[in-house]
Image (cartoon, rainbow, N blue to C red; front, side, top):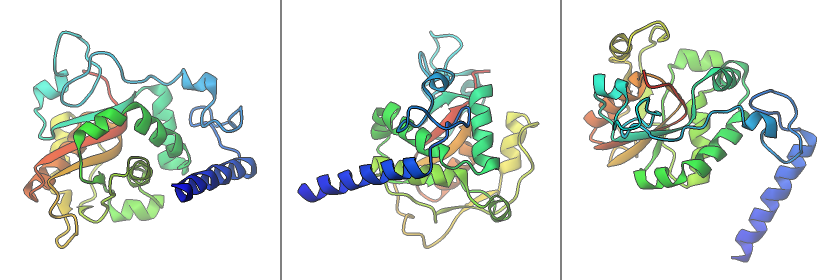
Length: 249
């Protein structure tokens, strides 16, 4: 007990020292966060749109009509995963922050988002009862070009905060797909067919449940494609977590 207290105290002092030598920048405005010790500017925090209110029972999107149970996307395109949850609505503010992470190597912003997810979504994460966190993989060529996989960076942080084991060697991306932005939901899913596979011999092949982790959930095509592959591998219950989620349309 005393050792754990000492270790936690050491980690706190280490964080403080790191914050002094390398001031943390705000994930919204990009400026040095004031007051020191915080992870986001107080004024910028209120600019983020947290997911709340009546939510889709399947993907967790905010519902246009509160009396409904499922969003339009999940009604039109039934999903194979059990359910999912996200921290923020995907709008101009959160989208710009995600761009900074993915294309400008602002991985430090994930420290804030992972802590917020563990705090705000902690109960939902616990209810998922997932045996492992599986980040959505990127193609090796894209990984070499970018230098990192933002979904894996997020999953690493969430694993430390939630104590759920991290699984990075089971789900792999075997096909480089076309950009998804201009495609319809149906076209997106077709585009992703055969893009993912399971690596045989992984220590995680015997999982019964797992939580997929990604930065953004829009139509759900990527999560659905990953879910189908994991189902074929024998993992019966799949959930997902994301920082941002698109609107109900």
